[in-house]
Image (cartoon, rainbow, N blue to C red):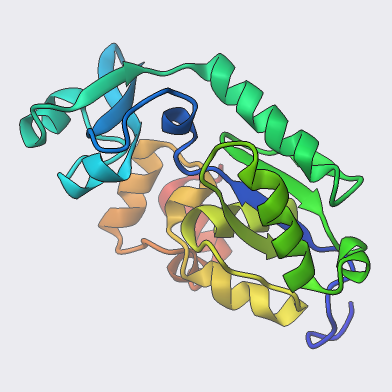
Length: 218
């Protein structure tokens, strides 16, 4: 019940690796590359490098569609074991910054940095030390921070570089995030889209009873 202007006592930093499936593979930085995985028995792009993105390839795209946009696409099978090892490297490096470190969701590590901010002279000092530690792990990463691990993870994935240091800052940041962050089924997402609900803010403007009646209590 602290005032909205009061700085959060517990602050979670999320380190998200947006290209983790690509980063763990030995690929050329000049050749378009995509990592694929079978989804409903059909190969689908899980991640791609910036070269492939410039050719129109996007995660979630069917491999056939990706190849139609970029015929020379270097498609590789996903290596989950290598991804896990890289995340463990990030988590081990995070121990230099905090005693509380967790693997959180696919491609993210969260660490509690409320006490670390005093040790490293504020958030800027924490982020500088974090960049130094994580750069040695050989993967691209982005940061976000909030009062809960889940909020920090959502912001890192969809609004990287966001830092909600005060209680009153978080609601405004979360309202702009897409409803996909909730982990709903495709059927539920389609129902929301048909009603014009595409962000958390639009969803929160609806009544709780109305949402349960239109989209199901779950």
